[in-house]
Image (cartoon, rainbow, N blue to C red):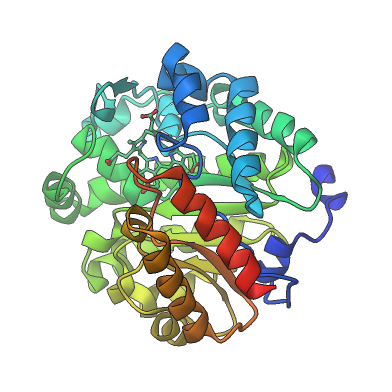
Length: 347
Ligand code: 1CP
């Protein structure tokens, strides 16, 4: 944790801690990616997984996106699925297509075949990338480490890749609670080691991505998923902001507030002021611009940004972001316009 002791209080960290800031900090989920020509240029020569496992290149991609956009935080370039390798699961990346897992997990027997996890060694390239990035990052800019939340990881691990409805995941997890708890316990434990090691290597903030949690009913979430999220949260140093992103999860907010996160990252489905009322004004909020707004034009972007500022009335503890990641077809100029606009309006 020595690296963090030397870190200044960035505008982003101040907002996480509900302090007043010089401007509203902004960063964007998936700020490094397909929509950016510099990223496309790197990917022309390097396969996605080779990029993820190359610390110097990951640092370069992370820093380039941060600089080009002038956002207040960098998020380390990596992927939520890489952690599956430490259990002996083979992640591949199909082009076109996306990530998939060659040996999906569908029974307690499959879980018993996991290799003994060695997070520190198997994911050392992520920790190295964080160290390199932190060294080159301006001291007034935050560095966010991240992981997939256990349920979202379980979705991919069970289905073997993306799915439209994750029905197989629900069938197996809701139908066999022993299987569900066994899998979620293992995923929780490796996530705890993974996140704490990211902090040791320079991440000053952690975000947990729960991209698919919204498919669960409130009572299944409470019984099956919430205890693991609380366990992860309680394993982390309280001085490190902990951001929980639950996508499509506004029906779960009364449960989600029990995670006791520093910041809740919200999607666009519920208006910000209503969401904040439910999640509680003792925590910071991040979000909630619909990513498809960035496919439109400056005028539409401006009116949506103004609406968000009207809803929060410049209250401290707000971090501007999208309600989900930047869509691959988003024009770069629209993204840059958004960042500059948020900075200028809030100054
Ligand atoms: O070059 C390419 O086409 C690769 C596209 C890509 C990128 C740029 C993937 C494959 N992953 C990433 C990087 C990534 N993934 C980052 C770091 C970059 C940044 O944010 O600037 C992060 C934070 C993630 C997190 C991630 N991966 C999530 C959670 C956030 C979300 O979008 O919901 C998820 C669900 C994944 C899985 C994944 N990896 C890649 C894709 C295309 C997907 C989604 C697959 C699906 O549709 O379910």
